[in-house]
Length: 243
Length: 214
Picture 1 (tube, rainbow over the protein chains, first blue to last red):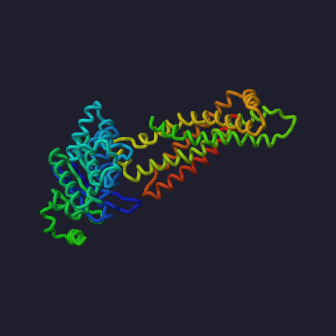
Picture 2: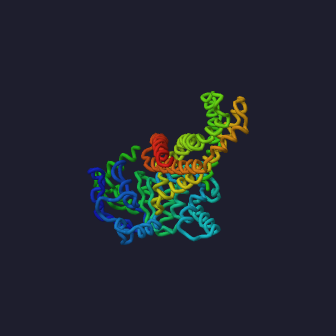
Picture 3: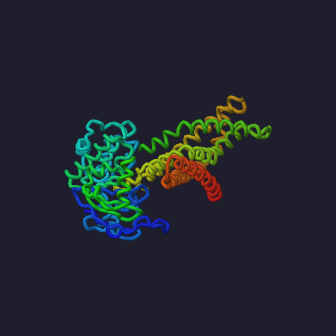
């Protein structure tokens, strides 16, 4: 479980996150939604340690991430997987080498064991047989799935996805959403997804928080979104439909 | 090993071309400036050989390599930065600075001195060829001059320069690549900065090393 307690983040005196508190439970797809520039990405970067919050706490199963020493931070980071908006696959590596990378860095697996693990991960993301392709040789949707494969290569407990559907067609988006939900339930991971895709919200949003101007404006389940009595959230949902 | 191949073997052709023409042109210019019956022909060989070793091979070659290797390193790391590959390494708990920059710096300081040795050799070959082709001096005279003036310290000085320049080029370029924020335009800008700063620092350190060691 990940808990956020009164999280603040400022850049040059401008407060981008204004005291966010919530918790993300394992085995559920937790969505962070909100308009661009609202603070979603900053929140996620603080959670994964790419940014240092100005104040507040981020607890990974009770461990205060920003108060741990370097070794403890490394240990927590090895339990984190992340799917980036632009995939962040290593261009000079093949699909197999990309997924194998964290295994090589952090495990004592033999090459044969690593190969088996890579094939297992590719199977999980329904991409068997593309081991030797380079990222430039596969489609955007496949890259996203390889990114998920790399994220789950180690036995992670927390999966973060930054706009996993951006740049994808509706059918592929659906495939990615289903895959994320499937993996979350199967491995009982704490999955946190940044998105402004309302289809994702209604399909897989077990727990949703709506960020507006750096504040947690609304929190609930997908079944409650439509019924929410919140002007900004309603405006956000309606704008998404008109898109 | 891959970085050594990229930096070392990948730069061999340009280093060879520069060295041969550098040696040839220097020979012709020195012959032009030393028109006197009192100056023996082997002197030309000794001047060309020494200037190749002390200045031309390390400095001119490294200035060119600052363009080739430096821009390559800065754009490679810059692209990794803007495409979130560096962030991916950080999230995995890997020290991205050390992981990305160290192999390039190590490859540079190992391969540049090798390239400079090749450059010195080819520069002399170019000098011998130009002297012979123009009828200014024979290969034997050139080699005699080069051998008479050879000091092992000059070679060591040349290698010290190569080592220092290699460190400057690879570290400055890695730094600028790593500092890239934005998109393709900023990658290009980082690449340009890497080359300019490397070249200026090479010239400063050239003066400093010459002042200190000669």
